[in-house]
Image 1 (cartoon, rainbow, N blue to C red):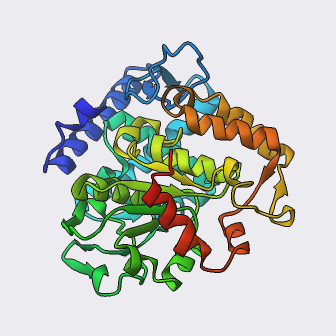
Image 2: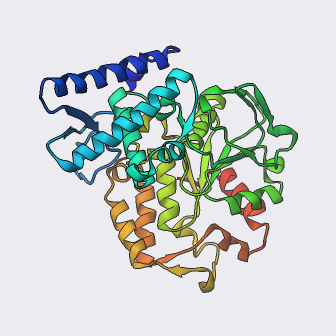
Image 3: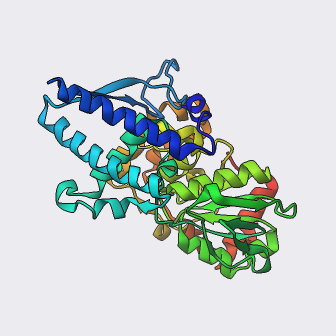
Length: 365
């Protein structure tokens, strides 16, 4: 995918429009000749459960093809949805406009039935046209926030976070339009899982005291947040740390930042942040910080199933064995906790003691 992407330059819209015409023409030609059209969609994955280490996951290499034909009813519906969404994309590109996935859904809600159907069609189109979603002028409603020692502009609009380093600014949706002024006073980037912790750090003037940039995706990060974080690291050349809850969902969010998601595995190389380091909260730290029993919760059956599935992922075995060790420990102890459990020490313990001491001492994996 990476090599094919490089051929898309400033003429991306016209290139994509030519590809759309070629795709639709081949379908129409088959139909006019009385033949069932066959649409071949490459399939990608960013992990598997192969233990030999001989897999090609997360390498941008297709692991197979899915063939869509009119001979199967479920394929006919998928092709119908795909072509409807493709028509919207073509219009957006021709008019140089942007639309959200939700906008597209509401154009044919009775046909699409649910948002996930549109999401799948958009991913299929990206694979067919060998591009990223933002190249289609399809954008997400941004959830991410940023604060700290940073200046950037998006499509001519300037954001000077440095004047108010503890004030939250929205992560830009059109990341391709962002220009970053390189600020040498920022020491690192801290990614936090959720908004409540982000606000705790803002209230404690964490960025002012530590000269850093803090980003949150408010849960599972959306595409703009992941693209913006990758851009920050590439342009500013700063170390990046991630703080998540000590539970299966927090650790899964951590892996999404570093390795990408299965749903968008075709674009993983352009969304993942391999440089990110896990700062906490580790299962092995529960005793070290004397978290009382009432701050700990037992893992549910769903939690255990999720951990067991994560332990099988090839990238943890291959690239992050220490993360896998902590996951094993989480499962063995059967207890989880939130970041906020550290507040049992004091309300400012997280910002004044835990984070600075860990970063200063290099206690991350």
